[in-house]
Amino acid sequence: MTRESTRASVPATTGTVTTAVPARLDRLPWSRWHWMIVIGLGTVWILDGLEVTIVGNIAGRLAEDGSGLDITAAQVTGTAAALYVAGACSGALFFGWLTDRYGRKKLFMVTLAVYLGATALTALSMESWWFFLFRFLTGFGIGGEYAAINSAIDELIPSLYRGRVDLIINGSYWLGAIGGALLSIVMLDTDIFAVNVGWRLSFALGVVLGLVILLVRRHVPESPRWQFIHGHGEDAEKLVSSVEREVEEEHGRPLPAPAGEITIHQRRSIGFGLIAKTVFRRYPRRAVLGLSLFIGQAFLYNAITFGFGTILTTFFDVPTGHTGYYFAVIAAGNFLGPLLLGKLFDTVGRRVMISSTYLLSGLLLFGTAWLFGSGVLTATTLTACWCVVLFFASAGASSAYLTVSEVFPMETRAMAIAFFYAIGTAAGGISGPLIFADLTESGVPSETVLAFQIGAGLMCAAGLVAAFLAVKAERRSLEDIAEPLSAARDEAEPSRG
Image 1: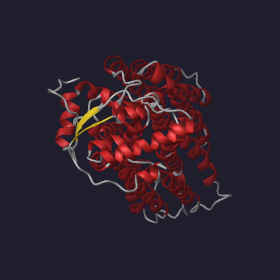
Image 2: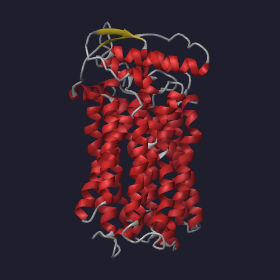
Image 3: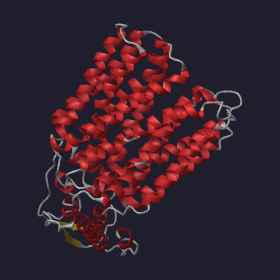
Image 4: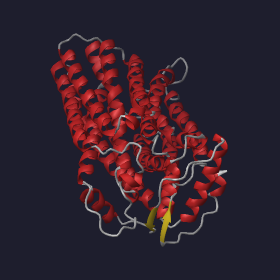
């Protein structure tokens, strides 16, 4: 089996090697092995969506007398949320650097362990400072997950399927959000669980699910692309040969010949200075694209979801205990977008789909803002409008992660994901709440309309940037999209922008 072939790792030795490993991976048909990667790496987003949604919904319960924690609802949605965001940004940058240096597998095991440990200790909170500390550390782990997992997925999934798989995996966060919204209704029912028990069990359930994911993840291999660049070429060859045998046995036919080879000057590590120089000097237009996509989607989501419950309760008198049902509906729209549109990113193409999903979601949100300001919407019709907006926005937001994970050289991949994720998360999680909180809580329709318009405007701007700068990466090898820094070539390659 594949996992047996990777147990005895050959010590790293550097030199110049010629390998067909990337082409061999890209020409594989879909198989059980790929499903194992998707389940082992991708399902953690379901867990993240579950936990983040639960935390938002239990804020009021934590503030009640008898919850076992001396904390206010504002501290849960304000201080704790900001610390979670700060942890995610810090973790993405820290673990992203380690992922490029020490490998994908080591880090996606470590980051999940950090995430699970911090979540478990959050459930044991008796003091507010303890709750704040472990919310930060939970974010620290999940930020690292984004860098380690997205880089591993793109390097293991064949180019024919890379776009749709990446989008669906990132969009699966919203499956967890649906579960979290509905689960919180049960966990907060004092006829079932005591005031000081239900919220703790919510975190404990997340830990149990995470442990199951950790068991599956043990069998996900290291990225062969990372291995052959960092002096583990023999391990990479053994791993790919093992996978090829499994796939041929499953499909009952021999695989076609790989499309080509690449020659690499192996090196054990890449300096941070070279990474930064590559991203911003060699590929400046791609850097602008990544920043635009992440910031646009961050502000759109904050324009809608940050004040979601407040808007429903303030303008439509929806009881606080019922907002979870509405959230489950818009979460479903978020998941269906990547699920149904994902294939088009591999067939119609990245540029058309990225720009159109950003522009459509922005324009639809402008329309929703106008209807809201006109006073013609109800809680149900507003939720329906949000559902349509987020159907397209979720596919666009997921494509932001796909974009930054495939348009930069392999040696910089995890760090690039970490950097753009950190910028987008900081913009959405820090600037967004500061801008939108007063607008959505004021009770003045025109101010909430302004919040919608800001998010819509930035989303449309990002869509226009994508229309001009998006890279035609569909069905292309990662090495063709951005040549590795370690690749042997006769002369220096000019900037690709």
